[in-house]
Length: 235
Ligand SMILES: [Zn+2]
Image (cartoon, rainbow, N blue to C red; front, side, top):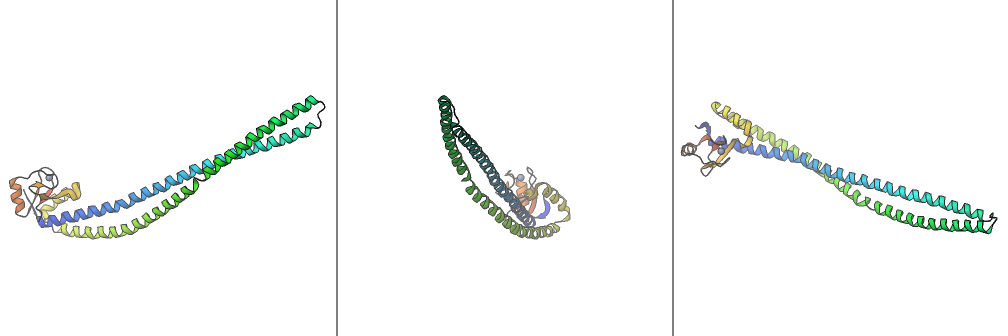
């Protein structure tokens, strides 16, 4: 059973539908690129926050140890001040031993402070490359945004143009075929039509019957019995 539609007009309709589908694909690519760029920026900013947190902790370690050192040093000064007040040799010796032990402890603390400062420096060094990464991600996001804005305006115009062409072409369909055409297009979109390839349906590659091929060769449109596509003979 053939439709009262010419292969020529179906060929045109199929081309317009494919153009529209392609334009809509391109239109949806822009927002996807923006999402990807935004995620890149967010990831870099999260890394920056983590490093800033690391720096804060490393600073706290330095501050704590410096505080310990100051209190140890003032304790030593205090003990040294008491040396002259010692009444016995034994008392004096004990106090001197105590001062020597405390001085040893401050040396260890001083080494620990140096290590903590080095650690702080190495953590701080991680910031510069992350700042560069964030600046790059921001620039790429802005560039993509500008590109998408510019392109989508052009694509929208193109969609409107093709849509108008499609409406006009559909308006020329014979009334008794319009319903079948609309139903199939509604469910399959641009895939609702297929050119015959060799002796098979271009949509599902099912072999066509001699009868169908005969009708097609007369320039008629025949639905594929397997996938329901509207078939037409390619030029
Ligand atoms: Zn088919």
